[in-house]
Structure formats: structure tokens, C-alpha cells
Image (cartoon, rainbow, N blue to C red; front, top):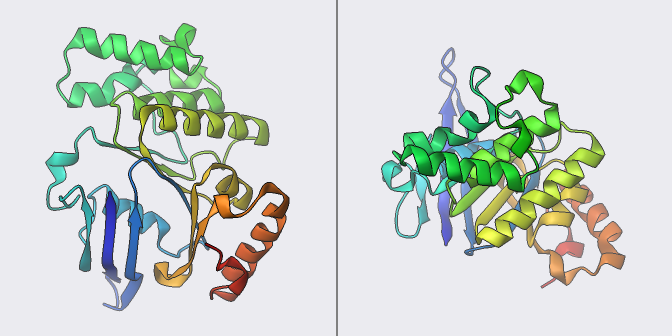
Length: 255
């Protein structure tokens, strides 16, 4: 269970000392194994929430609690339990695909033989077994992102975070990787949180869609199952209206 409790994050500009409220009093609960898509305008606090979830930042007020611990205060307790896939693959260019996937296992002190076995297994699942010795420069953008996904799954994380992980790829590749990510997350029993600007993607993957306004104001929390496929166009329009007006749309108030 992930519990975001009255969370507030304020940054201060170095030159002026002016306060910038990235997140203002956000409360949100995410159940184990749930797939949640977060949508919102650029600068609304989505990525800041990710930084708080992985313990890179401390809340200004409130807290995030995951199974009784806080990501920032209990940082070491979450090593190997939270994995992130970013928009850019962030592969190390001097390491092969296999060695990039092995990296988190190295940091966790997993024995070398197990590192290799687990990493090759995930490269195989993602269709890259014969490219294990290839370097990032020798791989396409989609292949590099597959390596990044394998690197995330190799630690068998409890929580998966995807920050615009597919938006920079062509439509066909993005769709294939998105489906693969969702399938693997469900097979592994991971809780997954995805940031996306694409409403079609949010509707396709999410058990829930959380809509953020400015400063991560919670404008809507939508159960996708409550909207049959024949009404997805209406759902998309209502979310767009919510984002444009920066206020809740009554059409989204559906249990």
C-alpha cells in the first residue's frame, strides 16, 4: 500500500528566495498491484511526486508511507524494491546491454552468476537475448528502452514507476513496449505508477487515472472499469476539459 498523506513540497528559487509550490496538500492511496496512470499539464508536480516516491527529495510537509516506511527517511529499506523507467533510457554507453541490466544487481551485491542468469533471462523475455553483448550505440531507440525495462524488472521490484517512458518512441514501438510493460508488471505482481501526457495511453493501461491540476491538485480519480470502451471517447473529452479548466468536471464523478 502506498499512502500519500497531506503531502506538500515547496522549492525556493536561489536568486530571489521566492517559494514555488510544486505539490500542495496531496492525499492519495494506491493499493498493492494497482496500475495507476497520472496525467496533468507540464509543471503540475508529477515528476516531483516521483522524486518523493523514490526518496530523492524530502516532503516539506506531510508524508509518503509505503508498508509503514517512508522513502526518504528509510531510504535503504527500499533498495531493490522500487524501480523506475525514464523517458530517456539512461543506459551507460560503455557497458553492454547485459552489463547495463546487471547494474542494479551489482549494487545490491547479488552473486555474479545469479546476476548473469537473471539479466539474460530478462533480455530474453524482452526479445534481446542475441543483443546481450551489443552496446547502446548499436541498438535502436526501442531496443535501448527494452534494455531499460529489463534493468527495472531484473530486481523484481514491488513498485514500478514509469516517467513518460514511451512518449518519445514511434506509435507502433510505443504501443508494443507499453503492452509489454503492463503484462510484465501484472505477471510480477508489481504496483505500477505511470506518468503520461497521452490520454489514450492512460486509458489503455490504467486501472485508475489520476488527473493533476496545478501544484498537484487532485482534480479527478477515475476508475477506468466504470467506463466501457464505447464511452472512452467521452472519457477522454472530459479529462481534456478538466485539464484545460484546471477544475473537476462533473462528468468524471462516476464510481
